[in-house]
Length: 113
Image (tube, rainbow, N blue to C red; front, side, top):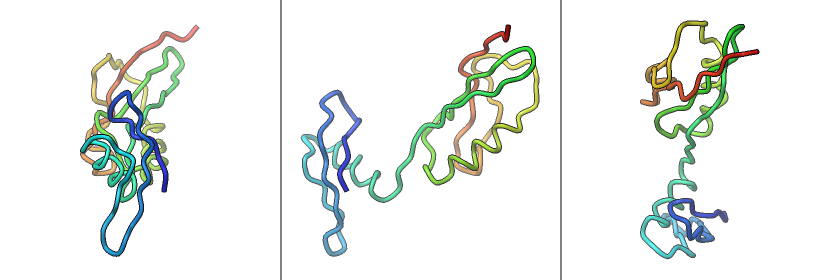
């Protein structure tokens, strides 16, 4: 597998492969790149960002920590079921979504016109 490390602005091009029982990362210039490569190979995670539209406003949301990429579709389905309420920036709208330890937090509130 080939990927680009996102741990710093250098953007090292990593090659990650399994050799025997060990995951080998090459192309990194620091230890963080190796950790990132192993993580991407074994269990890739991302912070989930989305929005929910109500009649009077739109909420922008994100998870406070990265979650397993395989769970993102299910998480989106759960987020889309949020009911309209007077939410503010910083409010947690779903705690521990899909038992990942991640909270879904309001990052913006836009008035619909």
